[in-house]
Image (cartoon, rainbow, N blue to C red):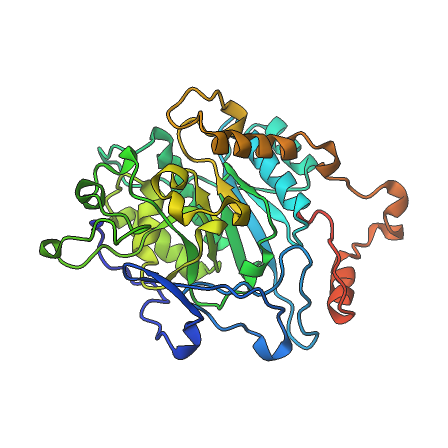
Length: 387
């Protein structure tokens, strides 16, 4: 169990009602995994019922229409970039991938001050909204992070300050989206949604889970020893999650950072501690951590995967050599090539309005087009949407 104190999170201890239970599919240990019906969102279903496993509310890609009588909500994807390295390629690939699946929402790229102007211009040229933030640092300590650069990831916490958006989906820069996931924005409010992580790789060797061979992805293979008490809380991979910005949560997170001893997985451990009472798992299709391919192949159906997380050592497509452990696998090669197909596709580059298309007086008509699309039951993609 992670050595964290309980937090005073404003959403803790929300009652779980019958509305929060969907169509039961299977059980993984204490995690109740629910089927995500592929259904149109209609007026009588809005807001949609929250599920133990989040419902799929509309066919991805086609786009659903909200009832015109409901207030418009602002949604966005958000990712994080630091330094002057090659991770900017990953973010460009993410932006183009979101455009390919025809998302209706923009991509906000949160950058630290050390991201060079050249990289910012590249991102803006791909239709991204670039926002600079100041870094967040944990208290000074001797913690050995799983990766040295994890210490800068605490800066991600500032995305909770973006209250101009009612809900956001965070995606790491080494993620690619292969099917539209806009439906996740319509999940029931009041919870944080993400995909359960896998504890089987050596980077988890410091944990009790790894030491006893227990993994929440296949908890019946090796059961949690009764002599160790209750199994650990469900734990999500923080490379992808659905959340609601809130100033109160943002301020409380920053306070929590300063009084919590950092641990191996940095902000991921912190977020799991902080949101453990309102976390709800969603299927691995929404964040396929590549280690699942060789650790839990029985749980993976590649043809159904919507989001791939290239977080395994050696799997970053823009650095791929195939020489690292497990990287010679054919499924890995296919996924790397799939990423490059999107990255190299010039037709997916962002195309701003031509001068002849800009309205007289420079008036921004995008909000009016969006409103019209909702009232008229049409689907439009507004610039610089789909970053």
